[in-house]
Length: 199
Image: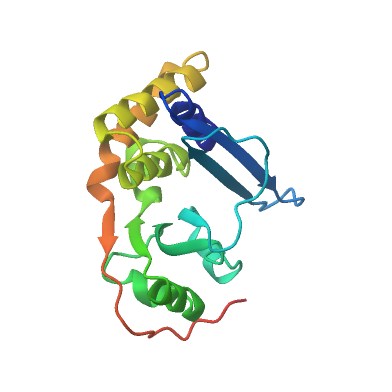
């Protein structure tokens, strides 16, 4: 729902066209969803997955996915990579599989790290991190001015959850307001040090 809201926020801006294409896993338990979000100044006429080496932003919501799926094969050179992880900024590099480190170095990716679970827990959201990751996306991408983007996210939260529960709205707003203080840029080392394989 957060990614669908992101597309709506971007698409409602003057001069922007936006589209979301979502790929759902067939498994019911532990299933994943891959969101392909595209936007720009030209109309988008068809829905399809982003091609390899073309993605300018990749977000990993579950750190375990990094050793299970080739998440960075679609990353463009110097793309942005956002990782949700419980590892600290000083420890996160050593938790990444060898192939992930290799791609980060080889493609010169800009890496950002957040413990979205910690932010969600502190805000009273349990393990619900979508709004937190959405806030990071807008803060890092610079698609909209940061203050404007955050206000748009809050407005989307009111639309999405307002008719269900004021409490849920308030908890999400609290999480949004505390997200950026927990978002860190990773200075990636120049050498691969991991021996963690892909599963």
